[in-house]
Each structure stands twice: as structure tokens, then as C-alpha cells.
Length: 363
Image (cartoon, rainbow, N blue to C red; front, side, top):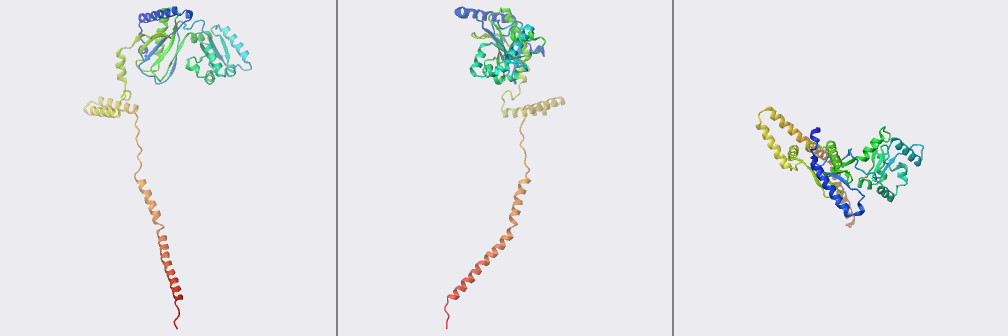
């Protein structure tokens, strides 16, 4: 598996691209005298063969530090029990000095972050004052609700550090001088910061080689991964340093299913019919077993909904019961009809008696 994930980079080609990029940055710096002392970031742009199914964050250790000494680093710590915020700051400053950590410029306890940096303007000011944010691993899950969305939009979310580790200086140095890359499941391109313009060409090439190999090994995708790799700065054009072979494309086409190719249901039905015809023509038992396995795999990949069949007898029985209930009270209705027929006879009798009363008597 390790041989498949490795990416064969041409070191000479990478170095030529780095030298060309550094020459471009020097010419641009001489034009603007104000920005002579500032360094620009050098990043790698990766184009993948497939869109990843899951998002992930890859941490990349680098042989040469990609941050300058002027970068400001902030550390968020937890609130120590039975201590005020000032006492916790002093406690962690002493701890870092004892362990030999000198890169952190400010320490902010969790309670101070909740109270003093609650307004929107304070959060934006905090974001602009520091280049990197670290957080104690014990409070890492509590920070997103307090720091705001701008930290994530500008890719400055805090990186977790274990402040209880025995090798604290080594761990913090790896996090600060290393880099990380976010792989999303919304596209096939991703970028990672690898170096700065103040480094030599050899140091940049070594960082590029280390970053490419670690990313290729940690990506959660099967088969060929890298399609294109470019190197660029904030203001330059992307220079290609790696292009994959056509053999990777043929391997991917073999592994692709009809669903991945965008086949319509009619085409899938035709493919199934062709496979059934092949089954009938194939006489050996091994061919039949392989065809059966292929059918099972297709059924697992493309599940189909089967309609539930309702029994045909139940709907016929229900109306018959209703008819029986309706027929039962008919005899009572017949009696009422007879009574109704008898009533008008009585009325006729009454009318006759009235008529007889009106007739005068004959003497």
C-alpha cells in the first residue's frame, strides 16, 4: 500500500519551479520598497482525481520551519481551579519557561476569552493581532462557540496542544513550524502552506517533498490520488511541478461503476441484459459464479425500492360487511311504511264524518 500512495516527484523540476518563483518575488519586492522586509507565503495547490467522500484535516510535519521568528502565536488555556485569570497566566508562563518554549507571545485563559473578547470588534482585533492560535486540548471543543466564524473563514482556527505532555517543547514546535491542510468533500482542490520567500531553494524543495508524501499517505481515498500539483505564492501564477500519468486514468475507469459514470436506468437495464446473455452462453461453472458475484455487487451498490403488495381480499370483505349492516334494519323500515299507509285511511275516515255532519237532515 505504501508504494501505491507515494508520488514520484522530480526533485530537479521542483527546484527549477522554486527558483523561478523566488526570482519573481524578488523582482516584485524591488518594485515596492515598502515591502522589502516582508515575506510571502509559498503554498502547494493539489488537484485530486476524485472528490473525497469525507472531510478531514491533515497535519503535516516539515523538516524546515515555515514560519518566521516575527510571527505572533497566541495560546488559549483552561481556567485552573482556585486561581484567578492573572494567576493562571503566570502559572502557564512559568510552565512554558521551564519546558523551554519561547515561541508563544501571549496566553489567554478561557474565562478572559469569554468576558473580554465577547464583542464582535474585540474578536476581529484578536484575529488580526496574531498569526497562529493554539489551544489546550482540554478546552478545544468549547472554543467554536466563543471565537466566531471569522477564525474559520480565514483558516486561523486554534490547533490543539497537550499541555500535560512530557515533551511539551517538541510538540509545540512541531505544531508551530509544521502545517495543516483541510480536505473538503465539496471539491477536488485543496491548498497547504509549505514555506516562505525568505527560505533557500533547497529548504523549500525538501518541505515540498515531505508535504506531498505525507498528504498522499494520509488521504482517505482508494487508488490513484494526485492528479496535478502546483506551487504558488499569494500574488504569482501557479507553476506545475507534478502531473499524473494516463495509466492512473485507466485504473480509475476500470474501478468506476455505471452509477459513477452517470448511466441512465435504461443503460443499466441494457447492461444487465447483456450480462444475463453472457451467463447463458458461458458454459464453465467459474464464469457463472463470477457473473453471480457481479450481480450481487451491483445490487448492493444500487439498492432498489420494492413496492409493498396489499392483499386483494381485505377491501372486498369490508364493503360486504357494510351492506349486511345496511340490510339488517330494513324490516323496521317496512313496518313504518305500513303504519304510514294506515294513517291516511284514518284521515279519510275523519273527512267522511265531517262531510256527513254538514249534510242537512231530510224530514
